[in-house]
Image (cartoon, rainbow, N blue to C red):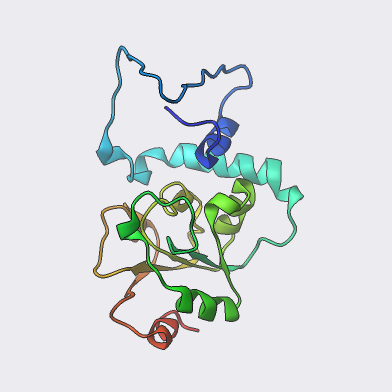
Length: 194
């Protein structure tokens, strides 16, 4: 697998590898010729085929890192690609919902901005979350493997129901779907059960 070493994905997956594994940094602005590369886009969002790795990774994180943090259990979390996120490649999947974020923070939700959050604390919070509100986009891809199976999940979509990037979350978890632009802030809060 190819990762940049400065990413959260790399920090997570390195925990699954033997200590004697060697890494070779791919340099920016450099062209590489690979003898063989296989990309299967259908596999990216299908977690069923990777549960053994996900379970191993969750176990390693709990064993190695849970003693470093004290207050990460039973939280209500917001994981929405919003105007607060700095590292956004696709602007059209961003939901500009500052009023909603402020209202939810007033109801004791924690707004997570992955690029500003320690990756191991983030994983622990997601594994022990009571409720998670999420949107599609880069805030979801790796983070969804840590979603607590017993948490209440709310999928907030910008305009219409979009399940393409959510993968099998709707099969493995109980997920409630909410369209942002069809509702007032209070209607969304009511649908969240607050």
